[in-house]
Amino acid sequence: MADVGGAGRMGDGALWRELARPAFLRSSLPWRAAGYLLASGVVGLLFGAGLLVAVTVAGVLAVLVVGLPLLGALALVGLPFAAWERWLVRLLDGRPVPDPHRVPGRPGLAAWLRLRYRERVTWRELGFAGLAAVVLWPIDLVVAGFALAVPGYLLAALPLLLLDGEQVNLLKLWQVHSPVVAAGLGVVGLVALPLLAYPVTAVAAGRATVVRLVLSPGGQELRIGELVSSRARLVDAFEAERRRIERDLHDGAQQRLVALSMTLGLASLDAPPGGPLAARLAQAQHEAGETLASLRELINGIHPRVLTDRGLPDACVDAADRSPVPVDVVFDLPGRLPAPVESAGYFVVSEALANISKHSGAGHALVEGRYADGLLTIEVSDDGRGGAAPGGGTGLTGLADRVSVVEGTLTVSSPPGGPTLLRVEIPCLPLSTPPTGSA
Image 1 (cartoon, rainbow, N blue to C red):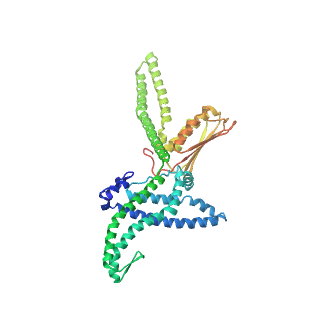
Image 2 (tube, one colour):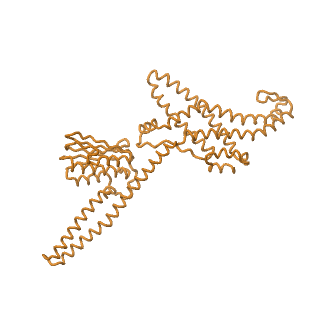
Image 3 (cartoon, helix red, strand yellow):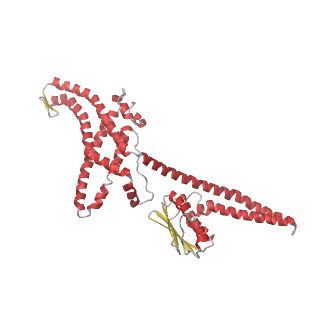
């Protein structure tokens, strides 16, 4: 091994392969292995002592009930200990150990705790922390201490004897009086030091392998993480594509239709009034106007410009203005929200208003939106006949799917006879700066 630089390129089993290389003893790996075992042993000892005290105190206080939250909190002690172990292994072989924990879908301590208690890796980390606190730290300290202390004592025998002038107690077991014997022991220590580098590194490699097996993401966790990441990428790509199509239609086809309608209007002015040509030009201009209106509705259905420029409240007001049922819109938001969240919220409101006008028989509807504790809540209610249910042609299943993509939930209360209440909750954080293209 060419020294530390090779550690960053180590793959699985590389530590074991390094033991067989001629340059092993000239590398820094034996010293890193000894340091790794010393650090893990000392921290394991301190962690075990602290854990014993905490469990004892929590067990005593549990009789008075106040210790129960502490017992629950002790289930999470494996998280910081596992983070330390993953960092320490990286110092040994240069390869990072991925963090298997998922990011909570919504901000806040409660969401974080719920997710952590449900994850299997949390309990694996707790088990490994208990193993390290009881079993591993003595092994680490004994191996590292023996490999460093014994050669160190042997090498120091002659200097200590010369300083004392009479004798030296070697390892507290053997009294040495002869400088020749002390020098011979120093030679033995000099030979033992590189020889002991092999078992020390082997033990460190074995321990690092255990850490990677237990504290790295499992196959299911990797798949879940990749699915979450890929879904987020797909959502972003889908929203970007919708905005591109909306922009192309708005700036391209719509402008051409406006120009065509104006050209037909000018042509009708030059046509003989009352003649067949004037009638046909008027009909063509009317058809162009109808097509333009349909195109505008299509653009609004793809991604309304007002949503991009002015945000969710104004977009919902625009949707309410186009509804045949009178709609009141009330929003209380701290600012702009992430584009996928605004898009999901808008299309839920738009589809809900379309359902109200088609199926509910309502005389009035209300759209309310608010943001609190990292959660966007949108409620759409009406005074119609009720009875809305998934699979009934109302598109509720599609709305639920759209909301779930941004980690949100959709609930509907619609008893027969009404009223109907549709609620959407989406975890998100406000943007510190407006999205690109906003006013």
